[in-house]
Image (cartoon, rainbow, N blue to C red; front, side):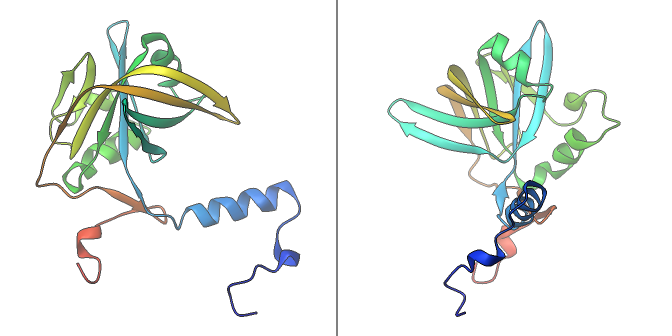
Length: 176
């Protein structure tokens, strides 16, 4: 085979093998790291995500995919408002703190403030505040569509990128 054709005899047939093949393949897709946040009943909630995308410019909107078992899921649905923080290289400590099993307060590290009623990281590359306009369940996740309420951006930031279970610096990529 020349590499351009798929040998269907090599496609895993059982579910476990298919899930393993999917996870292995997705590990090699570089993705920007986002901190998704909300406030509900006076408490801040947040998770890290890579399944975020711009959806439309009219109206300006974002698409965010969140596992229904995530601590943020219920509060986001209840509050109907969320923040999307595009983490920069300088926010790696915040990302690692968010992922730490010993972190009792994910917001105890970093310069957090509020934008349109949601927590945003002042040092993030970009931050968006959104109003939830649609939610759709699929598999283990919910697909949330948020319409933009407010946004801010820093010109001097490089996104924190996740690749093969590690954070990488894309500013050091060859040819850049």
